[in-house]
Structure formats: structure tokens, C-alpha cells
Length: 500
Image (tube, rainbow, N blue to C red; front, side, top):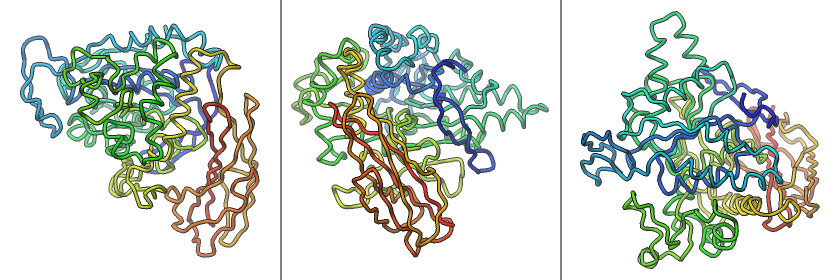
């Protein structure tokens, strides 16, 4: 495995072809990013680089989508079938931003790499990250007929002998990944090896899809590879995307506002973050006529404020993988910084959001399909601000998250009526004081009632398993610890109590 010296132990759960979940102890989550290169992809990419120490990045692949494609250079025209893209009409190319912008951001990352190492020695070398950049299927929306450098690269990873799951993030269309899977099928189907190859690829592949941005998942992958695990984010991502000011609860909107971004991200944090795109910042992607957000007149027309957040619609696909103690990537229904998903009733390997994955919005006092993502906005934005500081400040001048532990097992068997003791502890690397908060993540568990937690604001707490809890019910209790540094940083532990 690459970056083998950057190990930390965590639990990753594989959804196998049987539909069961099997635990496996391994390293940081292996992940491939595929991107069509929109303005929000670029902002997502900048943030992701600051979390590259917490991921095992193994591929950065250019792909196309219904919104962005390069054309074949021969004048061939294309008309989209996708509802979002029909307004673009017949085109020879569409808003294509080239195949060099990732490398340009990696050059900027290299400037701050020495300082980032002061905060975590596990940041990957810029040269290593550059070696991961490949060009996939970019000519047209959904084009998957051609074998490309990017598709072959992904194919080689899905076929390698490393059994650790590969989380493939789809920031654009699914066509390059579809081409990789098609190449595997073409090579092995009909041979004596096919059954074993199919099971191997399905057991290790997890696709995190941000919206359907072409038809290749629907038309090919879902039928030919039904046992590949899919996490489909069709709505929760909007909280971190263009309409955020209409869907994020009012108390959290300042964390996405111009004042916050000007103070914490855009200015006085170096060239990498100076290039982060915001409303009214004067920046313009010339090849993309739809990128008008930087124009100060457009800001007023759209009712935004200067330096307001534009979008990072793709960030949930890697926020989901960050080990902040929420155990989100053990099982998609657990929920965490990348959202919460429910298992399809008809397809056990397909997990989705939408109305079935609503959380109770504590601000609006109603069930909300977007709250599984928006509930974390304050914590993840403060964390982003701290990472921005890591680019330019010495260790002693920046804040770092506390480490959190629970004395008891994080998976416990309980009985109805039983009193359960919980003992938490936290250590802050900067010597900051910390506050404790125990709370029930009711939607993540299968027990539908409320659980009262005693001394929920102390390190040590307790609760009584409700008398009406039935065998098989699960109760999720979160220990949330926040330091008093600037910005305040939060980490967690999740206890899952199963009733027997």
C-alpha cells in the first residue's frame, strides 16, 4: 500500500455480495477522486488537500459530466439526455477547464507542504500526489467507449491484490469508472476467472456518487455490477452547494458567509487558499461562461454578500471518510460529516439519502432531508479554518483537535431496563480545556424513542435502556468533545448499544 508509513488503525466495513457487513482492520481509507473540474470541484479540491493527511489518496482522475466535457477536437456534436443539461443544447464541447488545474493546485500545495508537516507528518509529498493524476474519459458526457489512461489506472487498482476497500468519489459523471468496470468485464467475463474477479471487485469497491451527472451508472454499472456498494447522495450535498443560503439553518449560515470566509480562509493564509473561489472575489474561469460568481455586480443581483461561499457540492464524498470518531464509514446509516444514508429495500448494496434519511432539524423543529449534512456545518467549518491556519502558522500558533476516548466498548450488548454507565475522557494536544456533550443520534439507531442521558454535559454519563426497547434495537450515543481553542475544534466517539 502507498504511504504505508502513514498508518492509523480504523474500522472499515465492507458490504459483501451476500449483503452482510464484515469488519476489517486496516489503514486510512483508500480513495480515488474523479472530477469534471467545475468551480465547486476546485473549492472541494482545495479543502481536500488540507485533509490529505487523513486519507490514503491513490488516484486523481479527470472525467466528464453533463456539465463539462472537452469534445473530441473533430467537431463532433453532442446533445444531452440529462434533464439538468438539456438547456445547453447541441455542443461540440461544454465549459471544459482542461487537464492541468489539479497539477496547478498541487504546485501551490507544495509551497505549504513543509509547514503542514509541522502539524502532521502524514501529509503526502506533492510529487506523490502528482503521480496520481490521470486523464480519464473526458470527451463527452457519458462517453465510455474509449479505454483511457484514467480508466486503465482505476481498473488496475480494482484488480490489485490489496483487499482494503477502494472508495471512489464521483465529483462528476460515473463514465470513467464505468469504463474501468467495462474493461474488467470484457477481459474476464466468459472465462474461468470471472466469478472470482467479479466477487473480488464488488467486495472492495465503494462508489460515492454526487448526483447522477451522466447515464452510465443507470445504463451500465447498476445492471452489470449490482453487487458493487453505492452511496448515492442526491440531495444532502445541496447544503454545501449553490443553494446553501436557502437550505442551511439560519444559525449556521454565518459559517458560510463572506465575513467568515474573508477572516478564516481567503486572506492571510497563503496562495493556495487565496485561490479559493467566493462570491464577488474578482476571479473568473475564462473557459466557463457560467462562472460569473466573482463579478461584484452579480453578487448584488443574486442577493449575496462579497466573499460568501459559492459551493463545495462534492466535499461530502471525502468528509464521509474522515475519522473524526463518528464511525460514519463503518456503515452509511451511521451518519457523519459526509451525510447519512439508508439501505435500499430492494437493492442491499445501494445506500441513498432523500425522504427516508431525514433527521429532526433542531432549529426548524421538523423532519428535514438535508439535516443529516447541515447538522455538522459549524464543526466542519471550524475544522477547515484550523487547517487553513496550518498552512502558515507554527504548531504552537494553531489549534489542533482533541482526542476522545470512551472507557467502555463502543459496541455493547444491553438489556431493556438496564442502567448503562459511560465514562469519557479527552486529551487536547494544545492544552486547551474541553467541554463534553453526550447525545442520542436517534435517527441512526433503530430504537425509535428518546433516551434520557444523565449528566450529559460531564465526562461521565449514564442512561437507562428504555423498557419498551426490543431485541435487536440499536441505540446510538455520541460523545461530542469541543476544545476552547480558536477556532474551537470538535471530535467524537460513538457508542452503539444493541438490545438483546
